[in-house]
Every structure is written in C-alpha cells, then in structure tokens.
Image (cartoon, rainbow, N blue to C red):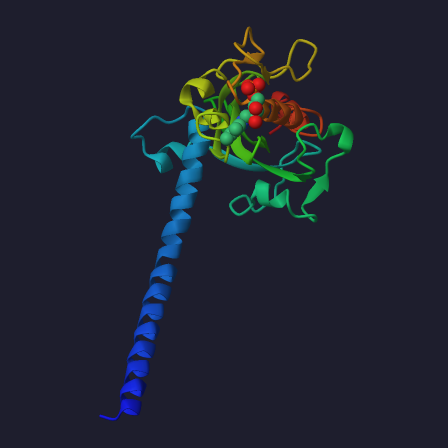
Length: 253
Ligand SMILES: Cc1cc2nc3c(=O)[nH]c(=O)nc-3n(C[C@H](O)[C@H](O)[C@H](O)COP(=O)(O)O)c2cc1C
C-alpha cells in the first residue's frame, strides 16, 4: 500500500471513531437529561423538607413532599398569584431578570443583594383545620466568597424558626463552611425573628448566642456570619417577606 493511501485510511478510521464517539456521547447526554432534571428536583425537595425538619434519613422524599403546598406570591402585596406557573417559577433566577425583579432601594439593601424578584415561591404545610403550621421561604445572602442560597422555615406564629439551611454555598470548609454544620443549624430551631416591637432581631453574634434572638457565631468566620445576619434582616424586613407574613397571620393565604 502506498504511503498516501495509508494516511488516508488512518484519517478515515480516526474520523469514523470521532463520529461514533460523538454520537455515543450525545445519546448519553440526551438520554440522561430527564434523569438529571428529576434528580435535581428531588434534591431541591429534600432541601426544602430538611430545612423544616420534615424528613429524616431514609424517608421517601416524594411521599413526604406530598404534604407540602407550593404557592407563588406577590412580594409587595403578600398575596397569592392565582395564575402563576408554580412548577416552573424560579425565584433565584427571577431575581436576576430585570423584567421579573425590582431594584432594592439602597437604604433597604442591607444584604447587598441589589435586586429582588417581584414574586416569591413559598412552601407550606397546613394542619387538619387548614391553618398554615409551617412556612418555608427562600433566603440567600452574601458570605465572604460566595452567595449562600437556602431556606428558612417558620412555625405557626410566623415568628419562631422551625429550621434553617443552605443548599449551595462556597465558603471555606471549617470556617464559613460551618454554616452547613448540623449542630450550628440546630441552634436556629426555636429562635425568634421579630422582637416585641416587631423589629427583625435575630442575628448571628460573635461568641455564644444568648436568649431568643441570638445564634452562636462561627469562629474565624465573622464575615460569613455577618452575611447570614444581614440576609435575615433583609428577607424579614418590609422589602422582604414582612407583607407575606401578615397575609399568612390573617389566614389569607
Ligand atoms: C484561607 C482563608 C479562608 C477564610 N475563609 C473565611 C470564610 O469562609 N468566612 C469568613 O468569614 N472568614 C474567612 N476567613 C477569615 C477572614 O479573612 C477574616 O479574618 C474573618 O472573617 C474574621 O473573623 P473572626 O473575627 O471570627 O476571626 C478566611 C481566611 C483565610 C486566610
């Protein structure tokens, strides 16, 4: 065989191999996509339930999530949006979309979030009389290195914390990353957001937290801890969920 023929053959074989491999990879990507989407959805359901202490290890996530009602609300009025696409609405993405969000006035932007979505996606559980006994809210804020995304769950008085947790954060493991430590997250349970005067009082302090409004600090991670406090102050302030909580307390959601 001539040298030229051999080169052509090598190129054809290499080309065919590339083609077959790329087809295989494409098929795998396309066929796995629905599975990946399903897994991501299941993971989010798990985070929502975990943030409210509504599942334990080994529980069936989809089964547990059946008791949860998902509602889209207007942040300004605190009222339910009847015709909203509840399934597909993503509050975090909406907050980055200028058409679906509003600028947070500088005086109220204590957490440095810049924009907030016009609508919020909230998760709730009712007791047998229909009264909401758990409300789970999206909350996020800036740490030292990252924006930390999570949920906070409130009990029937819409003031007592039922649970708290992040599903995505990029703080330093062992320092700011301790926001994921189950022991620290447990400190939130039973604490109160608002004081007697109706002001947002809950905060992460330096050292050991005392009383109903203080959470232990994260040693060597004061910047992350301050970011957590600032995000609580924003989300429960008048530009955040305050109006929604009034609607819930009035039994109108
Ligand atoms: C490699 C490295 C990683 C750090 N990661 C964090 C962090 O995730 N969160 C944080 O608040 N501080 C972190 N710090 C420390 C901050 O720079 C700062 O010193 C600290 O927040 C002060 O908190 P303290 O008063 O509790 O020591 C890190 C420092 C270094 C050198």
